[in-house]
Length: 437
Image (cartoon, rainbow, N blue to C red; front, side, top):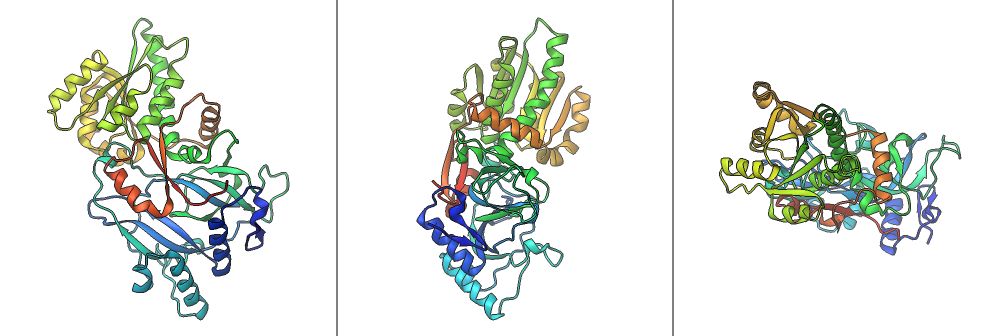
């Protein structure tokens, strides 16, 4: 079936698409509008967490590409404005987004539509006309944010729908190629059915042996976990040289998607023939379901951090599981309590690695205490494009086994976020936008 969006026939993609996808994209071509899902920061005072938006079909950048989004990781975008307005009560209350698209298209064609920009008058043309058409309410996020089941990021896997007019045939990419997107500075504000990439350097090809749903978990969750392991690896190497007769002990805190990736990547990095008997990895599970999932990892100790227990009991339990204090903690928890407990389990001179986002709020509170204890707290960046390329190779070759993931239709994003916030989904949650196979 040939479906044209702007000047591109989707039959050129070289893969079959479902009738539903073909119909939706034909409607997009007619109305010049597409759907977008935006997941906002789940804060206690933020009730409207998942937004269904209507945005214009973006033009393909001359030196870039336009991507048909197939899967996207259920990540939220942090520190964004919540002043998104509906153009009318008729649109904001409707549950049928297809009807909303047609209504909005008619208003735009008739000239009765006043554009509302999500970011205000200084927004870019690509952000213009973004309008909320259905606001879904999400309860306050609790456990899922604390244990890393729900985290900030941008994860997209799809196929190239069109290439820029100024690109040469030997640019290294082709229409229909399966790709993921590196989360560069300035990525779009949400997951659209079609999205543009300004430069091909942000695209990473996906081999046929790697499913797109798994590939969608790599650009933030797996990449951040890998970045933490690479940072820890430098410390491990130094300790192995300075203490040749002693084991290096690593504690990974959390059992959401971040920690589950970290356990698998750590095993691939450290359990080599030369070092497998010199490294000890322990996982501190923050919930029962995570305990079961983490327990499936070979050669990994498990300790359960049941929040109902007294702090002293949890610390003693961790000391027992780790055979004493540890040398390195990779903490994907997001609370002061988690970091404080990690410090109690860390030896003098030890290192704690936390994400950039957590570091922003916790480093000011704990820097002095860490200095007094002779410990180092280090913020871990998301990771580089080169590291993401390497991750694709390792996962596609089965050198690293991905954690479990569940796929949900994109129109169930609000329910998915609710479940993630309550830690009801084991492993990762992936949103599906299109059928291409």
